[in-house]
Image 1 (cartoon, rainbow, N blue to C red):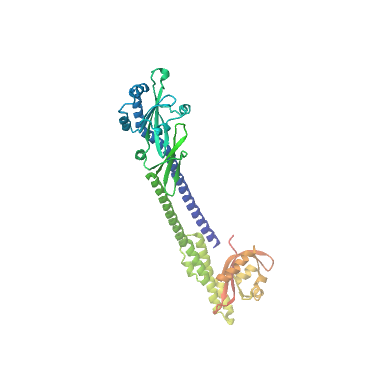
Image 2: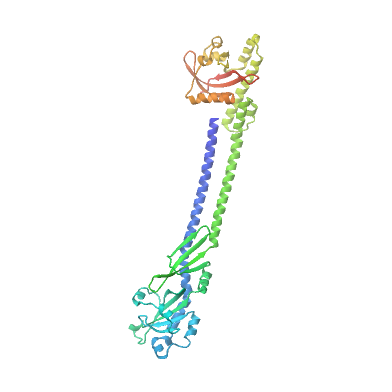
Length: 448
């Protein structure tokens, strides 16, 4: 029985470890892959936002370069004839709200609309700092707040009046456009999501809000002095990421179902091939009925060995019990003869005080003690049982009290002082009122 219990423990432990290992591996592998995809997405979203802003500003850049190529807005022409009358129309078509012409040190020479203090406030105030922040291209873009309105300002150089090589940056043309909802809507068309512009600059970066499955990316917008003036944020809920999250939850659900199915299989398997047979064995021991043992149908060699041993023991005990019920004082010799004709193992019986009341021929041969010398002796005095430890002795007592039977290996000391190792089966004997009247012991030498 102990071997069977160990088998069950090992099987359950292996099943649990395999289940935990499979779930952990799949969850960690798929989860890490999903997280890597999400992190790569949010990291590239900042670059995508920056590229979309550049693309959105490309048309304004082309418009400014086209205006700068017109000779009627050169400083000399403006000094002679003033700003052209069609300038307002051309600025409106290009999407600009104002225009300023300055000298190389950003001193304004002309503005449109004329004499607007708000325009002058958005012109760089230090040419040296601005020159350090110049872009590599022909047009430099920066951002400036006017009250609560954000402007995108484009600046490019134009020749002065002399047309000399040294006078190639003889003036600056500065044009600005208001960042309004149309600007945000154009970005959304290229990069679906919610666009928000903040007056307080924030560092560039991305974040994932796992609860809402929202991906946000922030990009700072710089002023003419190369310091952040504002920041723009886009919040998206991409379908592919929602699909990945859904697939992750689905996979976890499938894993739970698979583990539940696997555990159910283990349960039914153990119940069919181990738990049920062990219950039948326990019931057979309690009822002292070998029919419960015969109900076990299993190919496990341990169960087959246990089944054969218990059936033999029960059959022998039943036969002895029936014979002992039929015996009488005047027919004791015939009773002994019947036992000896059918039992090859050493058999002896004791009363409830441990005094030997029966001793067969095989017991005489095994213990080298005649029936005459054994009868009326205390069994524990005549035959001394040596236990390896007190746990085994305690187990025998508990088994007899609980099941009424005990089987196991004993190291016994014979009356002559020698020792032998035997297989023993001890069974409690009860009267019709279920009172203990003694014990029946069947002993044989094990096959070594």
